Length: 260
Ligand code: NAD
Image (cartoon, rainbow, N blue to C red; front, side, top):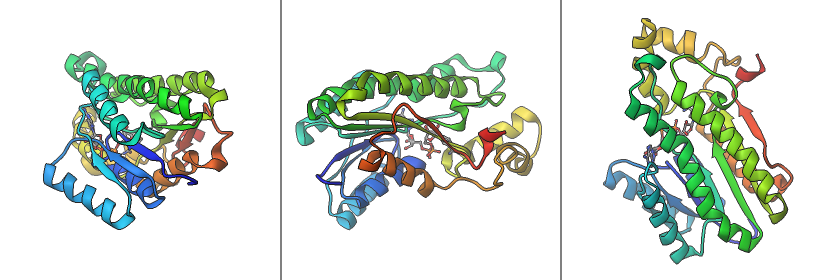
């Protein structure tokens, strides 16, 4: 990176987001962590990254389902760093249930965190990026932005929405040095995946071992989970100079899942 950038990664207290935050810190970017979790653990992560990478690392605990909290977070980042140069929309939740039993509050939460939050972060990040004539927006979508699975109606709807949002914003800002792309991972072994195994077992009436073999890895042709490091490396590439001509792309990173 030619100059010190500021990277905001939503949902970076765990899983893929934390891996991406670590990647950008190692590359020399200042990093804004966001997400839920134990305050002492988050502070330990923040201090470890700042110390080991010699960059500024801040934690902003905005609840991504709350537009006012997102606005407050952006105001704080603008006050300290001028704005966000690299925005990674990663925060996400899942809920697995048949559509006619899907709890309304869960539908609303999945859409708010997985889709609407990206609208808010993008609208708040763009003025600074336009002023700099440089910016990178990376959406952590999912293979479920491209194909569906039963019992994940809210998640699949939100992730397909992210694909559309990615393409639309990419077209709007293409001449201003700003790229917008979506990464579509297959199954990555993180707490989000671990948590949905019992729910899926219940919804399908099968064992947890069968969920892993016959549901999660059934379509993933490599029969391997994608790694957090692989997702972070692609996010890092998309944020770099060599990716300046990649925009509006919705990129599978799924062990061949969506090639079927
Ligand atoms: P994870 O559960 O490990 O991490 C999710 C992060 O989002 C955590 O930091 C959590 O605190 C944060 N978060 C949740 N609700 C929030 C809220 N209201 N406000 C702020 N932060 C909130 O999950 P993960 O597997 O690392 O998933 C990260 C992203 O990757 C999600 O968007 C997910 O849909 C996507 N994804 C995951 C996989 C996978 O197999 N793990 C596959 C494809 C896409």
